[in-house]
Image (cartoon, rainbow, N blue to C red; front, side):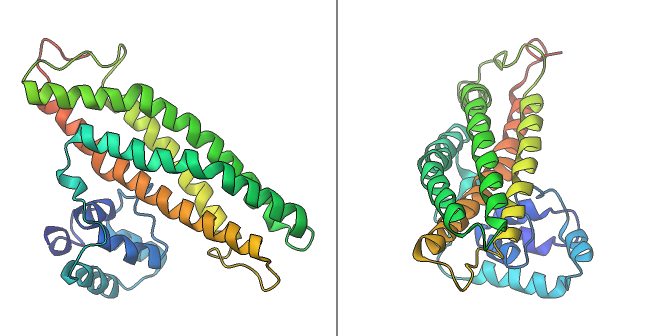
Length: 253
């Protein structure tokens, strides 16, 4: 409940969702980006989007009082190496599994309906670019950043000195790069959401058209969760851990 009590002061929207993932539903309802732009204060977001902060606060507070759980896993308490593995297995796996199918659907729909719905060409282009960049992005995380985080977690458990993670700096360098790439993909999927009218098929949409939008919406929702777990939980906790386990003789300059 700490997050709700501190709304409007120094807590960010990303921290609110990290504290209780049910609150993501409220931010999605009002098209508030809590993952790629989760570092903003709620009061600033409401001011910029001309939203009533008291209404948003009430809806957020209601999520805290709901019984059950939107996600039974407490990612805030998960060891960082386990969280990195979870993200890779669940969300990276989701991207790799579903990208080919969604590309095939969008290509077919654009070919059949593109003349009457020219926005389909840009939707296809935006998704194809997003998919390509995500695959490169995930490969960098899996070969560079996630192994470094897992090494940090192992050092913490064993009380051994921090390993030399990167030859030219600290964990903040690849983290910053990943976060910048998240912003780019967040902007792309925001554009896709706009072009699809919040994934609402037109009246003349065939079954394939409707399925394409449905799968696209699922993909975007999964990506928001994926980026949230990294930006708002994994990365900040990893940076904290790096500081906690570092010893003067092992710090990188």
